[in-house]
Amino acid sequence: MVSFQLSDEQDALREMTADFVKNEVIPKAEHHDRTGEYPVEIARKAFEVGLVNITIPEQYGGGGLGHLDETIITEELCYGCAGIAISMTVNSLASVPVILAGSEELKKKYLGMLTDEYCNASYCLSEPDAGSDVANMQTTAVRKGESYVINGSKAWVSGGAHAKWFTLFAYTDREKGHKGVTAFVVPSDLPGIEIGKKEDMMGQRASNTVFINFQDVEIPAENRIGGEGEGFKIAMQTFDRTRPPIGAAGVGIGRRAYDESKRYAMERKTFGVPIAQHQAVQFMLADMAIAVEAGRLLTWQAAWLADQGKRNTMYCSMAKCFAGDSAMRIATDAVQIFGGYGYSKEYPVEKLLRDAKVMQIYEGTNQIQRMIIAKNLLAT
Ligand SMILES: Cc1cc2nc3c(=O)[nH]c(=O)nc-3n(C[C@H](O)[C@H](O)[C@H](O)COP(=O)(O)OP(=O)(O)OC[C@H]3O[C@@H](n4cnc5c(N)ncnc54)[C@H](O)[C@@H]3O)c2cc1C
Image 1 (tube, rainbow, N blue to C red):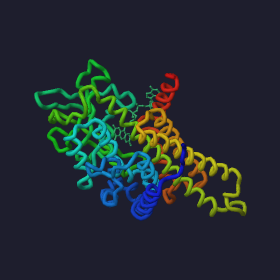
Image 2: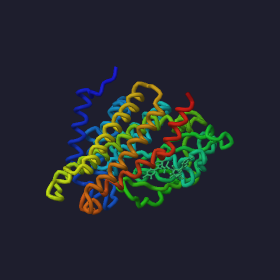
Image 3: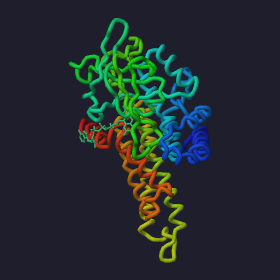
Image 4: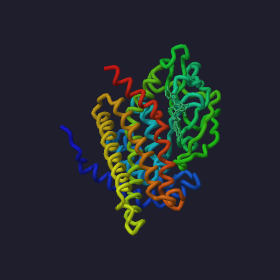
């Protein structure tokens, strides 16, 4: 049976998040975009009302919600500001590997740390020379008695300077290629960890994306997530849970750009009529609305499959790719509908265009998503 009807609980969750976004996020979005200041106070309030760590199981203090619920919340947060949203959603990317493959002790200690009081954890997979080609990572973890010693550099770590711990991927056996990658929890206060420069980014500027150097960082062997060599598999399984919310982020940005465009098109007049009466503008609005609806359905499907424990890799890539490309196209058309004013920082749509671009890049570029989709299609 197919139902597009949210439950009463999901409707209430969406409304509660939308209220939070209206009162706490939208009024402060311009400030955080301009200054790049990390929105700790907003995230702390979100934590207090239960909008952070929502998919961490209840026994570790989390919300115990599903991935579909997560997409509903993420769409609303990103409607407000995708950069601010990252200070709340980044924990999900770091915690999913622990939820999927961590020992009971790791779950209690590190998921508990996230749910006891507001703090962040970050995901350290990408490196300066390993993004799409992640198996080219250079970071190593060498076993030394009851410890591992980590050496290497991680790039583009979202929320990195504010994280209490990292989920980090490193080679324990380079000879084995991607089957030699292992995942670890690395507390951020250990000697040898140096937080590098914060990226001065085009969009999502509130998100604190940093470079991190790990030099002879010693962690207990029990901080390994899963077995040696299981890291690459864990990273890919993580994306099967985290790409639907990334799709939802694209839907949120796109929906905001559509709403702003519709409002403006009904007010702005040219040739004696509101521009919404010109068919060229109407068609842009219609295409925006189609893309928002279609993106949301793909995103919900991918998340629903994850909640059912079904294989969803291809659907995650479809959702992430379509919603990310749509966000970019919708935001571009929004600037067009605003005309010259769309190009000015006085109006909200130029920020949406800058925020949308990275939806085609992070968590696997949209070229990589198309490769995953094609591989799945051709395998059957
Ligand atoms: C704002 C931001 C936040 C991020 N947050 C995190 C984070 O928290 N943790 C983390 O680990 N990473 C994070 N990343 C890293 C992100 O996942 C990578 O940037 C992304 O995977 C692309 O890798 P790359 O930048 O090395 O680009 P490259 O891999 O060098 O790709 C460059 C271009 O080549 C294309 N390309 C590469 N290989 C192929 C191919 N085989 N076929 C066709 N085209 C190809 C790509 O699609 C892209 O267009 C973040 C990035 C950004 C920008």
